[in-house]
Amino acid sequence: MSIQALNSEGQIVRYTDKRRWLWSLSLLWPLLPVISCVVAEKTGQAVWFWATWIIWYLIVPVIDHLLPADGSNPPPEVVPKLDADWYYRLLPMLTVPIHYITLIYSAWVISTGDLAWYSILGLALSVGLVNGIAINTGHELGHKTTGLERWLAKTVLAVVGYGHFFIEHNKGHHKDVATPDDPASSRMGENIYGFACREIPGAMRRAWRSEKARLERCGKGPWTLQNEVLQPLLITVPLYAGLIVAFGWVMLPYLALQMVWGWFGVLTSANYIEHYGLLRQKRDNGRFEACQPYHSWNSNHVMSNLILFNLQRHSDHHANPTRRYQSLRNFEHLPEYPSGYPLMFLIALFPPLWFAVMNPRVVAWADGRFDRINIRPGYRARLEARWGKRGSNAAAGA
Image 1 (spheres, helix red, strand yellow):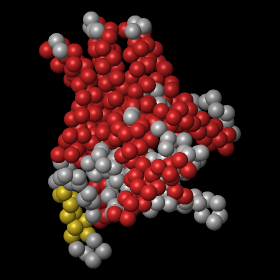
Image 2: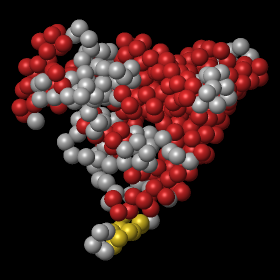
Image 3: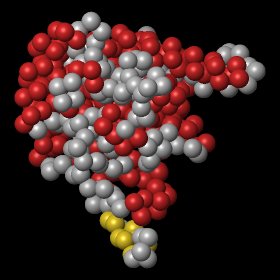
Image 4: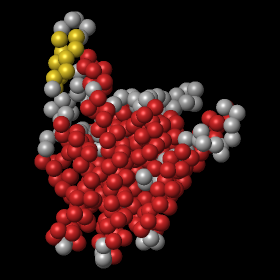
C-alpha cells in the first residue's frame, strides 16, 4: 500500500512501508504463553512453558542478526498521512485485551492443570515477559492525545500493576532523562540490580509527587478518582483479587512472579539500557540542554522493533514524544547498540559482560571526556582509570 503526498516543490512523493503487515506480529507476541500452553498440553513436553523466554532471549536475537538492520525513514511529506492511517493506530489498541486474555487463561491453566513447579515458574515468567511488554504498549498509547488511547494505556498498564508509569514516564522521565536527576536513566558503572533499587521506588515517588502537585493546582487532594496514578490501580486490585477468588491461593505466587518479571525483566531492563551513561550538558543558566536524539541509545534491528512498536528508535521518540511508532526516524551518528533489546536485556543481567560491551562505547561516544558521561557517584576515578585509555583508542578509531 503506497502513500503519496506533495513536497514543497509540488512533486509527488510516494512511500511504501515494507513492514506494514509485519507490524501485526505485535498481536501475536502477547499470545505466545497461550500458544505454548496449548502445545505443551498436546505434546506433554513441559519445555513449552518456557517457549516465550527461549524465543525472546535466543531466537529473536538470532533473527535480528540474520536480517539486515533497516535505517530507512519515511519521507517527511507522507508522515501526516502515515500517522492518520487507522491500521497502525488499531494495532496497539487491539493488543490491550490480548494481554488480559493471556493473564487469565494462564491462570486457569495453572489452577486446573497438574503442573510441576518448574512448569508453573516458566509459565509465570513468560506471562511476566509479555505483560512487561504491555508497559511498552501503554507507553505508545500514553503519549497520544486522544481520550481513547490514553484510557487504553492505563488499562493495559494495569494488567501488570504498573499504572503509575502513565504519569511517571510522561511527566518525569521525559523531563529529566539523561541527567543525574532521573531515577530512570542509568549511570556508567551502575549495574542493573543497583539501578533497579534506585529506579523502581524513585519512579513511584516521582509519579505520586507529580500527580499530587497537579491535583493541588486544581484545588483537590490526592485521594480522588481523578488521580491518574490511582485509576489503573483500581483496575489491578479487583482483577488480581478476582483471579485469587476464582482460581485459589496458587494465584499469589503466579501473579507475584509475572509482576516482578514484568517490572524488572522488561521495564527496568529497558530503562537501564536506553540511556546508559549518556548525559545532557548543563547550560550557563544552570538548566540542562534540551533532549536530543543522541541522548538515547538506538537500534535498527528489525525483528525486535516489530515486536516493540519501534521502541528501539528511542532517539527520535525522546526528541519527538508524540510521534507515532510507524513514523519514528533513524539519524546518522547516534549511539548504537550492537544488538536489539532482547539480547541487550540478557547481557545486562551479567554486569561484568555488560560493562565490557557498553563502557567502551560510552567512553568512545563521549570522545574520552568523562565530564560528558553520566557516571555513578564516587566511581569516576575508578572508571576513568579502567576505561579511559580504551575509550580514547576506540574514539580515535571511530
